[in-house]
Length: 169
Image: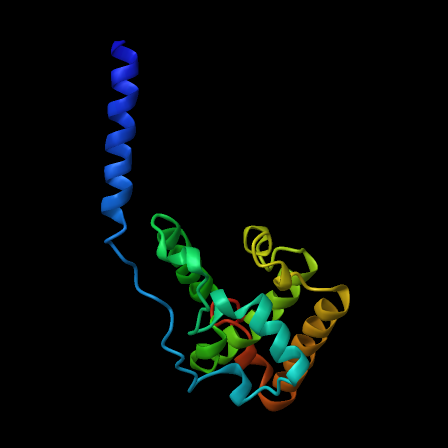
């Protein structure tokens, strides 16, 4: 009987905690600020823009499209942390703010993440099945990234595309 009362009370407390945390909201990634967006300097065709929108931009831009369940805590906190982490690593809408060497390196990392199937995250594509890229879409993104790096190599001195920490003195 004591165990049953304990379990009952534990569920009541858990329910009250879950109810209470619904009133604690995290900031939304909805600024839409694009003044330093990658497409201001590097051409992105409509097909590639569609791939970036469905597979990348929710976590790597200043505009996340939030699903209905993003209003439920603790799911909202989980999603918010993913977006913050994603933007910390790469933000397409802030790309031109990066130093040249970082822009170049981020374009290299795009290839690496796609080739190694690290992006988009499996936890994202489980729910957002349209974010799964086809092999053709992956190849298009990789080729675009390589073309942008080639352009940078033509536009800028080679040492400006290397991190100051890695430059030989």
